[in-house]
Amino acid sequence: MDHDVLIIGGSFAGMSAAMQLARARKAVLVLDIGMPRNRFAVTSHGFPGQDGQSPADIKARLREELSAYPTVRFHDGAALSARREGSGFRVSLADGGEVTAWRIVLAYGVRDSLPDLPGLAERWGASVLHCPYCHGYELDRQPVGVLARDEKAFHQAMMLPDWGPTTLFTGMAFRPTAEQVQSLKSRGVQIEETPVAELIGTAPALEAVRLEDGRIIALAGLFLAPQTAPSSDIAAQLGCEMQDGPTGPYIAVDQTQAITVPGVFAAGDLASPMPNATVAAAAGVMAGSAAHRSLIFDPELISI
Ligand SMILES: Cc1cc2nc3c(=O)[nH]c(=O)nc-3n(C[C@H](O)[C@H](O)[C@H](O)COP(=O)(O)OP(=O)(O)OC[C@H]3O[C@@H](n4cnc5c(N)ncnc54)[C@H](O)[C@@H]3O)c2cc1C
Image 1 (cartoon, rainbow, N blue to C red):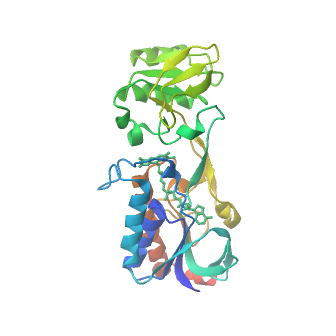
Image 2: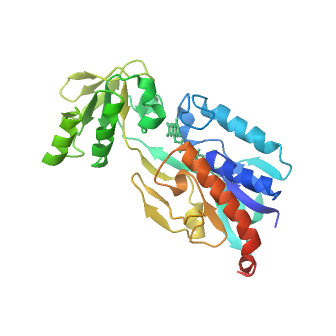
Image 3: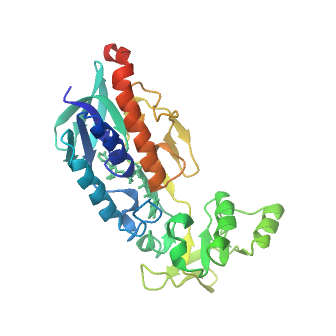
């Protein structure tokens, strides 16, 4: 095998996994196409020691730290497919090459799909947001909205008054129960049933939304739950078990980030219902150290 461990995806989860393996002097190859999920945001918040830095700067810093370890290599390109080969794995690359390793860590994240609404896509990550902990503080207690896709919007609308006066736009997507209406009122949330027609203001900032009946409601931020899907089908090719999450499917992992396929580990948004850079990094630490332990303690995998 060319490498001890192959890591597919070199962002928060993948580079954290690589760091554990690098410090155990394992031969690691990190494959990455440089499109982390938070690339649309100018700043990233809440990552320890890096609050308010740009996502690109944080990633560059992580990569610089890893580059100091002689057993780590990077390949800037996509993994296309993976299959078991003897007791290891063979992965095909977009440039036509192939690489092999004894273990794999899947850390290629998810991609978001957004509602098709005029003015929405160009504000994603700036004033159209999914996570109040990540970007709610910067809205400085100005009016915010929640765009419902389904009943999960209730939960988001209950949270958001801690960041600003909140309107829940239910549109056609969701009709709150009488009990939910009561709870929303107790939090001061306005409920607006008329669908949103478009977002207005100088993008990427948001000034208001225009409703289908022509009314305009001033807002500094609009929150929604995107639909998510794995960024690659490599997990499916390997036969990984998936489970349903609040925004889409994610890989089922155990407490060590091992998956149902022996020798394969998964970490980050791809394998978690909670999208957060620090959580992804912590899972990467676990996956990297579990892959290392597996090389030592699971010799039976060698004969699979
Ligand atoms: C707009 C936005 C803003 C956010 N802001 C914050 C914030 O402020 N704070 C916070 O904690 N969280 C934030 N998040 C969540 C955060 O981005 C994710 O939790 C985090 O990026 C997950 O890390 P990851 O390593 O699992 O995946 P990602 O960071 O998405 O990285 C996956 C990597 O895999 C690569 N890749 C994909 N497919 C392949 C392939 N086939 N071959 C090789 N490489 C591949 C990608 O290019 C990418 O570099 C935000 C999310 C969004 C959408």
